[in-house]
Image 1 (cartoon, one colour):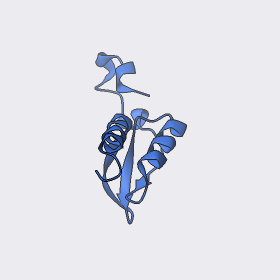
Image 2 (cartoon, helix red, strand yellow; image 1 turned 90 degrees about the horizontal axis):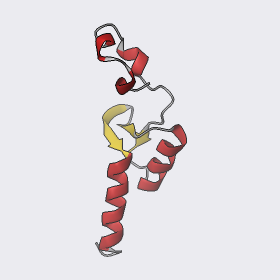
Image 3 (cartoon, rainbow, N blue to C red; image 1 turned 45 degrees about the vertical axis):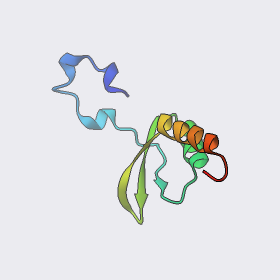
Image 4 (tube, rainbow, N blue to C red; image 1 turned 90 degrees about the vertical axis):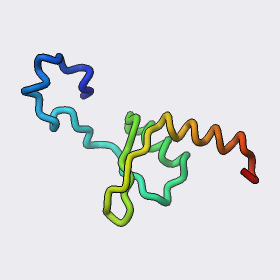
Amino acid sequence: TDLAGVPREQWATTPVDALTMRDIPVATLAWRIVDALRAMEAAGAEMMPVCDDGRFVGVVRAHELVRLEEVLEALGPKG
C-alpha cells in the first residue's frame, strides 16, 4: 500500500504497518547496479534497503540507480 492511497483523514488512525512492504529484497554493498535494479523490478519496488553485515546502511532508489548507470556509461571505461 502507498500513503497516497490512504485518505488524509485516515492518517491519524492508519498504522505504519499497513503501509510497510515486506516482500522486498535487501541489497548488500557488494551488489552491482544491475542486480539491484533487477531485484527491485521483480519485487515491484521503487526503493530497497541496503545492509552491511546485518546493519542497515541506507536506501537505494531505482531512479537514482538508473541515473548513476547513465552517468557511468557516459564517462566510459576510464571514467
